[in-house]
Image 1 (tube, rainbow, N blue to C red):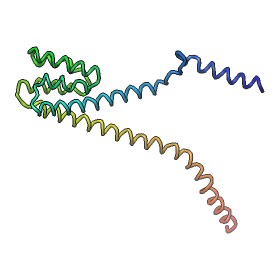
Image 2 (cartoon, one colour; image 1 turned 90 degrees about the vertical axis):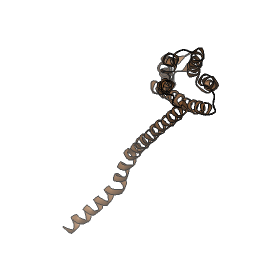
Image 3 (tube, helix red, strand yellow; image 1 turned 135 degrees about the vertical axis):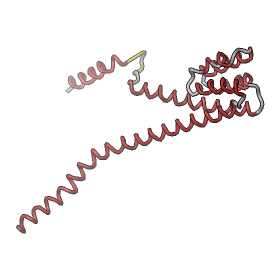
Length: 188
């Protein structure tokens, strides 16, 4: 008995040994992917909030470089650095297409850089473009959240069906069918 317990404990230690890193058990792959996806979603939400603040600053009459510097602290650190870079480039008088280049690779802000270059040439309001982009970002995240909730509902219903349906058939339907068959056998 004691040997069996020792083997089980040793087997558990051997199983967990490759997963131990500096005294902590590492995360499984699916958990790391989910955490990365959640960080991407939070980054897009922060971008939407930053765009709303940028639109409010521009509606209030602030120049674009000052507005970008004002909203940079609300963004994630890489996005804030990109916004500050754009603000400094614009303040120095660099062409809009070149000045907005650091923002093009940031999540949710690619369209803002295109709209900023377009509005610099056409003279339309960048604030309207920022509001519209923030609204579309939130709508896309909302529809993605609804899809994930629907998938979760289906995935939660599957185990219930797999567990309770056979039990219902064995304990509810089968005795009735066998009872009817026995009565019909006696009648015929």
